Length: 132
Length: 297
Image (cartoon, rainbow over all chains, first blue to last red; front, side, top):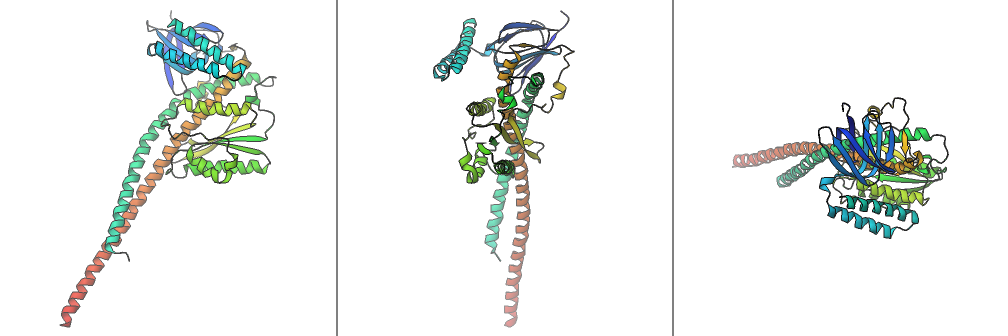
């Protein structure tokens, strides 16, 4: 494929990655979607999940992201994540810790709304834990 | 006139002070560089965020159901002022100028009969405001344990502010901090956070992209995205403010300590001249005494 997708990953602290890729699979709030070059403009919030980056020369990367949104423009894909960690640096123990924190959040939540939000977060984490 | 010994002691004490101020200046210079780097690194996120928000809010204009965070509660009776200052002193007029700006705003608002609440961030500002307005404090954010401001710090403040907002504690929220212009100039700034005043952050112009006539698809709905983004935007704005603040603080400290070092140098010169003169005078006096004593014989 001739055309490459320009891909930026930005965290609040700094620009994490600015590269070209064949395709990026984004964990959108309403389902995963793959982005190739020339994708229609889309704006989507992210759920807790894994960004799957297929690099230009077999340089594949999987990055754990939490919170934020993805913006696809004709110029490329920009992911603004509140937190982003390469999956290779994230092990099962760290995830278990997160799951523990999240389940405490569920118990501590005072309102129904907060509770369902925390529960959703926990579910996403558990799903991810199963995938790792 | 002070005795020679007293002069000597003063010279050595000023020299010690100069050593300290010089060391502090160098430390501030090193920290400033790091703070500046952090502020610059955070810019792309803030710029993109505000670009996206500007896009979204342009689409929302005039429509019903816009979130309160954007359009406000419809009143402006109660104001929350977040006053971000430093944790340490010895940085020239840095803290005072932020506090002065905040105080002018408090006086103006109170003159209009509005209720004012204050959320101080950083010890120095709290101490300065405590004397006059301690009854207006809603809480206090302590960052003295924080070496380098992280996003989680800003996020914590933001969630505190948001829960106050949801509880209907205030209508308008303004952040006071110091914009870093250069090492010698820091501009105390008031930034309105709620209702969000959406404008492009510096450097956002070149980030804006031409959509080529195509409209965005939103997933989920525009209003839902906006509901999620606005609280996050507040955290981002606070984060930016804190980073600017820490760069400004170090800049202010650096120039204050530079001045202090130079003053100490001048003082040492003056004292040394006085010391030499009085030493000379004493020698002359002793000589005259000896000679006139010899002549009297």
